[in-house]
Length: 190
Length: 190
Image 1 (cartoon, one colour):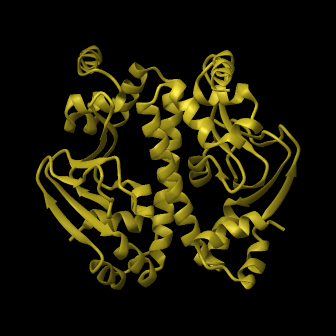
Image 2: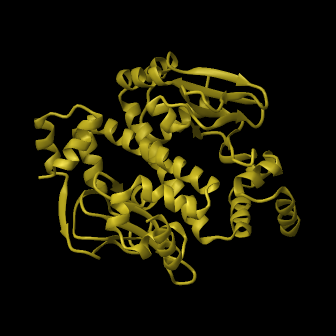
């Protein structure tokens, strides 16, 4: 099953075992290897994804043909291109596993049906989305006030496990730095 | 009353007149002049705010003692420091009217009570928050791929009314540009 997902739901709302039984029919569990894709540029983001185990990244190809990473998701995080998911529009993004992962997928039609059958999940998703807005406000503030070096140091102090698990060149892409510069910062810090 | 708010709710969910009557007890309408504050640094963000009419800005004081604007909200937009609101923590932000405004406020305790009494609003707020996440993903992507000049041009083309209503120095602060540079871009464009 998916203990991380159930624990995450119960962190925010009351959710009994009968509701878990109902939930099962809407969840697809994907066991993926490293570097497998959940979404490619031009496709519609058909599902929202919960990381039960592992790690995802989201990126787009910029006009210099580089992979620009915009988000990561570790355990307990949701990931989706929300405009594509909500409005059925082709996405500019790729979503890919960074390591071997266990991902829960809820398709757009399952999402609607699930919220009708288990209405208390509206509350869970409202809180999750509100916390995602809060996180993006905080990140946005950091981007305004911190140098890239400060941002890297804050990032690696706040998420030490993350910096261990994710290849250095991906962290560099996310932070808008060269891999060489991140390597220097890492040496400086140690 | 607040026709813009009711229309906004009905854009996303079914909402009958009986529900509107219930809703009224949770809403506080604030009629504010220009430059009035809804939140100051160090306070807890006690309410979420809907712009029925007018315009809000959110900013913090950076380490050079400049006002750094991070968000604006025109009619139909919500504004809050969500971490402060959710977790009852002091906010680093100011929220202030840019022009004479009519603002709807829902306090934290009213918000919980309202969602218990009118559960279909969970769905409205889930969708609103999900669309806010989507908007921040899009903005984030623009920040990665556009020069500041391109960002200004995209911004002023997408929101022409906004550029008319908001003072130039505020748009400059939001975009991380000097007022002089924005003034040059504006001339270039005309």
